[in-house]
Image: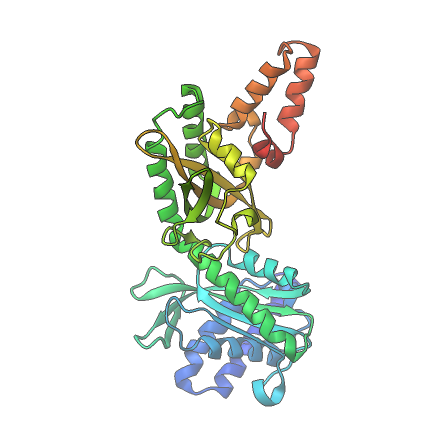
Length: 388
């Protein structure tokens, strides 16, 4: 038996579809009705409780018109303040409409961008629709699955934020468009970045000067662990170290960029903006025996979570074992990585073992147990970045 609020929602949607059939031609009414049904299907009844059928029809029809013709790979963004004369419906809020190929991270990335712009979100509607289009991109049919021939899943996002003036609308649109480009770049290059890491792991068998076999194996295990769905790959970049006398410069391989680092101007570390020399921290890493370093990027992620990206920096050697460059993966450790015990995470478990050994405490002593508890419960990010 339907709850009263669900019953009210069902009646509202019926009224909206009636309006579509009454106002549109028979040729369009059927497809638009399918669209309206899918558009509001998973919206909580409470979000629609106070809405008038005319407003719901106007909102859905506006979104339909925006995406009526669209080519795959092209994102469509519209930010506006609806009015009766131009749009056929009114709303107390600024409305944001987005249409894109369905892909991960869209909702949280766009919502984070709106928060960055200090906008209050009042409503989010986000149906995923199976859309069949003609060769010229026109919608032919809305279906329940993308398994049918010629059907692709498309993401329709309708967001309402506190009303903004006309001058602000363009900035909101540009911010969202950039986020969508970053999401698309990361998603499109994700498999290539994972394959690249697999290749790097296989090439890490040689023991560099200052390292032990145990260190090398632990580095490989860590990268396998990261590859095994504990790290969300967002970008990659390759640097070459070029020596001129006593001076060493970092040179970016501009063709190496993947994901959010496709653009050579994208920042990983602010200190590497000036590539004419290597900063002290990087120089120290080059001179150590460690094959890799885990640290934080200078850049806040525009994809998934708005935090400074995690960076995995891996040395590159020549045939003589000399450090000639570094490879940098940026991304975000997954929630599983933060929930696992330090004892189960390669690199951290070895670091913990070495710290306890350096302390001189017996693991079974009171002080040894206290130190172990500190390390096990220590915040994960600084533990990754801290030296022994």
